[in-house]
Amino acid sequence: MSKRKCLTIKEKNLILQEVDRGVKKKDIASKFGIPSSSLSTIIRNRDKIENNDLPNPCSKRLKTCVYEDVNEAVLKWIHAMRDKNVPISGPLITEKAMQFAKALGHDEFRGSSGWLDKFKRKQGIVGKVMSGESNDVSDKDCESWIAETLNKILKDYKPENIFNADETALFFQCLPQKTLTFKNEKCFGGKHSKARITIMLGANMTGNQKLKPLIIGKSKTPRCFKGTKSLEVDYEFNKKSWMTADICEKWIQKLDKLMIAEHRKIALIFDNCPAHPKDINKKLKNITVFYLPPNTTSKLQPMDRGVIQNFKLHYRKRMVRKVIAALENKQSMPKINLRESITELSKAWNSDVTDRTIRNSFAKGGYS
Image (cartoon, rainbow, N blue to C red; front, side, top):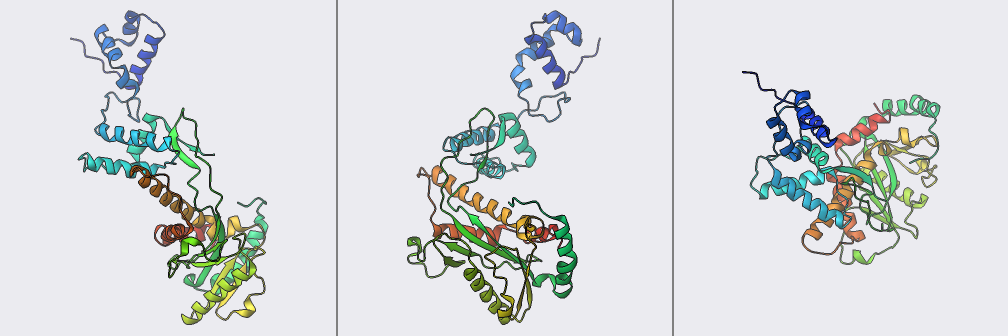
């Protein structure tokens, strides 16, 4: 009795391609050394063969999906969210899958990265865009500053007493511009809000001390602040919600008072922005401000080496969760106000941005 031949998934797909080209079944069976009954079985199982989620095409067994009900629920959820132009990320898909699995009684479901990759591949889900510094960085200036200034700072100050701070614009009502969606789907994200604030973020080299964020808005007393006794941030304002030398100086002097109270002397590293006062050191007691060379922030400034980006990622993720929660509760698309934004950005900064992220960003800037 001849031994039964076991074909791989790749070979079965080749057989189906031969069938689609109109090759006679007798010739196909002869070419691949299989009986006609096996060929009929392959044709009958076409959908399973072409849509299998095995990463290795040389596998010989089809793998059935254990959590098909979870996958179907997640797929319907993604369609519902994308119909409303809500941006979706991989972690959000996994988080939702865990919720569905628990509701469906699959307590052992883990939502691994392997599951997510297979799910995206099978459903044809890809990342799309919904729609720094411009000058070239001088390596010579960077190397010179590290050798002459940074090495002195590292020698004179302990890592926990070396701080960096930088401001960035935040369109606080906007959702992310990237989403996971289906390959054949046109990608729209709706009109983006132009409501903008400036936020100053700062932390020390060890990452164990994050400074209270400074928020610069347009209004002295926004209507949404009514009834608020205190904020999680320092708040300033001007007509364009930009950083100014006066606001920056006030912020540094407040930090200096804090360091005096803690009996600490620190180094504060700023970039060469015109809004950062250059003659501030003579007004300070426990802070010495050091300035980066022009056009080097993308390489030398820790906040720009991943901290601000990481903060914005977590903030946007919190915004998406609020939108999804509202839509799933049959509510309209929420429009977050400045007070709510301050609460969420404070949580993103204090809870979501990790010490490790900050330490790694300082290391990327040569602070080691």
